[in-house]
Image (tube, rainbow, N blue to C red):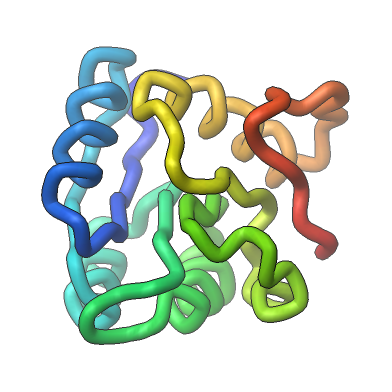
Length: 137
């Protein structure tokens, strides 16, 4: 799992920094941190991330658009990390495999991404970490 290229898409700089530090400490390769939809798509084109953590509410942009592009164009396994996890219907069709509700502890992110990787590879992930849930394909 270490050395996996991860893209963080989060417009709150403090949350993004916490997540980045947690992932770096766990051995992940953070290939970029994007605060907007356009920035996320440009970084994805450049680095082709294997995994991504995506907030839905971006300023400017929409994380659902980002997730759909990441999954469809780059085969990236996407975890939504958002305060909008209760809007499951709005996440369907994006290709994201799971949602981690805000607020969350950034130290949980390495284990959450490990579960997302397994889910994207079609492996059984039961039980999921109790702080996140799977999205329907």
